[in-house]
Amino acid sequence: MDLFDLGHDELRVGGLPLSLLAERVGQTPFYAYDRALIAARIAAVRQVLPHGVLLHYAVKANPMAALVGYMCPLVDGMDVASAGELKLALDAGTDPQCIGFAGPGKRDAELRQAVAAGVLLHVESERELSALRSIAQALVRPARVALRINPDFELRGAGMHMGGGAKPFGIDAEQVPAMLRAMAQEGLVFEGFHIYPGSQNLRGNVIAESLQRSVDLVLRLAQHAPAPLRYVNLGGGWGIPYTVGDKRLDLAPVAEALAQAQAALTHDWPAARLALELGRYLVGEAGIYVARVLDRKVSRGQVFLVTDGGMHQHLAASGNFGQVIRRNYPVVIGNRLQAVEREPATVVGPLCTPLDVLAERMDLAAARPGDLVVVLQSGAYGASASPQAFLGHPPCVEVLV
Image (cartoon, rainbow, N blue to C red):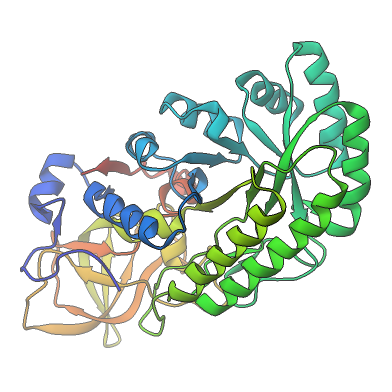
């Protein structure tokens, strides 16, 4: 389930033994991201993408500034969901023409920033269209627009459904034709569409079906467009395995569906470019979270390893970030990978809440105070998706190795 080298007694990150990396970082807990693994994953995705399909990074997955800067030349663009993420992408050197800005609650100030920067706005409501008309006139600068569609279907097997049914995201597909006609009247610069049905899907055939249905929907709606279709963002949703029962995503049907989608799109709109936005799939398996064991306690026969990290820094691993039934992330004692002595143990943090659990009754190397607990698959939705101010503990550090 992981891509890190587990063949030594110590986990190695970027070629460094974990204990040495911890000394270099200077404290625990910390997140570490392996740049070589990120580059390798991007290269592997490029191998299955049809020629001409654009690969964008969804900054929300991991907005660490150094990581975003490292990825900038490796991808074709960035997708952001706030003015803060927009600044990150611009500071990293991303061409504004290659930035898409989505999100259901864009403030007028954010819309002004986006228009001033020249990025593509994924419009999600009539209010945004109305505001953009006034902003474009005030700035004497065109507002580049792609309508985000809330499709009339859901992505089966997704960890989170972002489209289909009643959703705060995007514009219901049946309302899109009228909004396209309004765009012609308002003089905004129409470029295309954005559809993001869902996330964290491990079923390649389901993603393939979603891609096909999304392109069919786009081609129907494009008949009402006020200008030629130039851009279609089909989202992502590619999942990574987190637990023992998870099977790695089979990209073969996804690649075939992408080729068919591109062919259908270019047949009707030869100048249109197809884009994917991937976040978790690019960085999730390239990161780890490291905490140090502070105490080993035995309560009524159950071993508890108390660490200096916890749910306030890694909410997802605690099971409180969208899981209905808590399942363990892959966890190892990073400086005792080859230890013969093992025991079932529960890893908890220092917080005064029973929710502060990083691993529950897992088979782990027998650990003592000072050892390093490692949560794998932690490169996405980690530090930035966690309530780090909870109970006043110090924030964790993030490093790119």
